[in-house]
Image 1 (cartoon, rainbow, N blue to C red):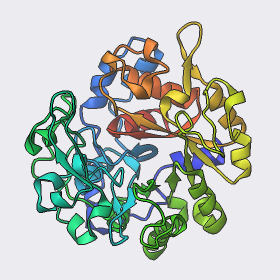
Image 2: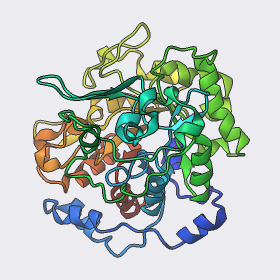
Image 3: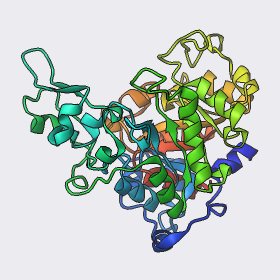
Amino acid sequence: MTLKTTLIVAGLAASTATGALAQDMVGGLTYGPRPFYLIDRMEDGPLKDKLASCMAQTPAASKFSIGHRGAPLQFPEHTRESNIAAARMGAGILECDVTFTADLELVCRHAQNDLHTTTDILASDLAERCTSPFSPANGDTNASAECRTSDITLAEFRTLTGKMDAANNRATTVEDYMDGTAKWRTDLYSVQDGQLMTHAESIALFDALGADFTPELKSASVEMPFNGFSQADYAQKLVDEYVAAGIDPARVWLQSFNLDDVKYWVENTPEFGAQAVYLDDRYEASDDDEGLIDPNDPATFKPTMQELADMGVQYIAPPMWMLLTLDDGGNMVASAYAKAAQEADLGIITWTLERSGPLTAGGGWYFQSVTAATDTDGDYFTILHALREEAGVVGVFSDWPATTTYYANCMGL
C-alpha cells in the first residue's frame, strides 16, 4: 500500500473527535438497507459473493468514503442534517464547497449562484435582492432565476433554509419552481430541516463528528477581485479558518478546479498544500495552461500527469467516467488517464457515486464511459470495485456514503 493510499483510506484513529455529538456516534454507525438492496441486484459472481459475505460486519468509518455535500441523495446538500447523516453512514471525510457572501464571509454552497435551487430564498423577503429575480415560464422560454451568496450578507444567509437542489423549469409560480425534486430523491427530510452552515461552522461540526475535511474553493460568479477581495485572499482565508480552529493539516484535503489555487496552496501554505486536490475539469475546460483532454489519449494531456506532479500536485480528482473504459470483452478497465496518474504517483480521488439517478436507465453523465456494461443498480458496486482495483482510486465522493462505506469495510480499506 502506498503512502497516499495509507493516508486517505486509513481508519479514523488519527482524528480527534470531541464533544457530545461524537460520543453519541460511538457504535451508532449504520448502513441502512441500501447496500444490501444493491447487492441483491448484482449479477452472480465472485464480487457479489464477497460483498454478501460481509453482511454481518460492524460498520466502521472509512476515509475511502467521502460525503459529497453530505448525503444529498435524500438530504438537502451542505446542511447540518445532510452531513450528520453522511457521518452516521461512515463517511470518514466530509465536504464543504466554499463560496462567499456580500460581506466576504465563507459559507458552504455548491456554487455562489445556486441559492435559488438549494434554499428557500425565492419564497423569502430576500428574493428581491437576487441577481435575477424569478421569471415564470412563458411559451418556449423556461422559468429562470439566479440568486447568489454575494447578493446577501452572512446575517441574511443565516435566515435561509436549505432544500433539495432542484427547480421546475416549466413553472409559472415560485412555489412550482421550487418543487422540482427528482422522483428518485425525496423531500422527506427537507420539509422542516435544512440548516445552512458557514465554512467555520462546518469545521466545528465535522471535527465533532470525528470526520476529516475536504473543502472546495468554488469559482466566483462575480468578477474578482470583489470589493478588494482577491483570488489569493480567498484561497488564503479558506486555510486561515482551519488554522484558527486548530485543525491538523494532515486532516484537510483542499480542493479546486482552478489549478492556480492548488499551486497557491502548495507554494504559500505547504502544510496544507501537501494534500491539495486538483479537481480535473479538462473534459470541458481549456485555457493557456490546460487543454481539452481525451482520457484514453495521453497525447492530449496538458499538463501531463508528471508535469502536475512536478508542480507539487499530490492528488487529482476527475469524474468517474474519465477513469474507466471498456475492453473488447465489455469489462471495466482503467483508462489511459488512470494509468498515467498512477505512473506519476498521483493519488486519485473521484466523483460522484449515486449522483445522477438509477443505473437501470444508464446512470447519466457520471457513468458515460461504462454505460454499455451497466443495467442494474447493483452495478454501483461493480463500478466501485473497478475504480479501486483497476484505476487505483483512494477515495470516492458519494451522494449516499453508506454504499462506499460498506464496500470499504468489506474490502478492508
